[in-house]
Length: 127
Image (cartoon, rainbow, N blue to C red; front, side, top):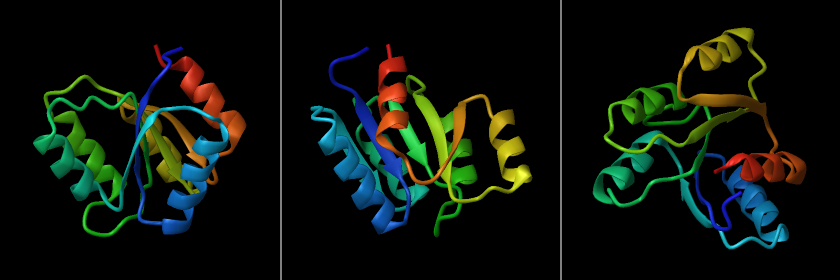
């Protein structure tokens, strides 16, 4: 497990952003945490900060401007070390789950909310 991990949250839900940030803080880690409200905001940030290589990205499906699916398509075209991507959604639609599993960059599909145990497991899997 890496001592310090770069994590991106791409989700327009401010409550989810807040709770997830507080959950990371409770784990007493010193990870770099970046929060974006939509996929376009995240992609623009990655394009202007080419030195940033996130280890983990948590991305929601339903967001304004650029949704999670379009974000994944854009991420695949970028010249970067590919991170572990986790779809984090309140959707339990089988179509969303199937689509996520068919995407090569998606490590797993997690139903909201993220809990400490899930975050620990994910962080422990980062090499």
